[in-house]
Amino acid sequence: MDRDARLKRLKFRAWHRGVREADMMVGGYYDRWHADWDDDQIAWFEALIEEQDVDIMAWAMGTAAVPARWQGEMMTRLQALDYIPLP
Image 1 (cartoon, one colour):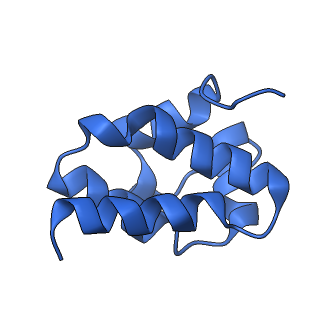
Image 2 (cartoon, rainbow, N blue to C red):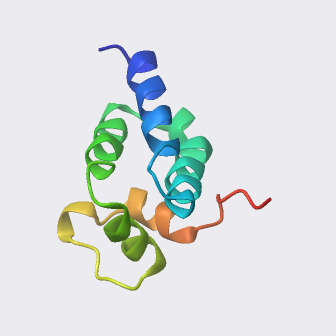
């Protein structure tokens, strides 16, 4: 699958999580950062969105320890929460 198709698929999945708060967090993160991602970062996000929303949100908000697999620059950006659109 080419880069554009991967990103289009990720955008849909990021904004259709099933819980509005998760949509805003994961979708907002996607919108803010996806344009700069390389293939490894796209793969990281593809894998992350397979996790449960409650886990992603807990890691982002710091209420649960981030597993080693997810630690790094991408998670640090997710934890900033400065990308969430406020109505």
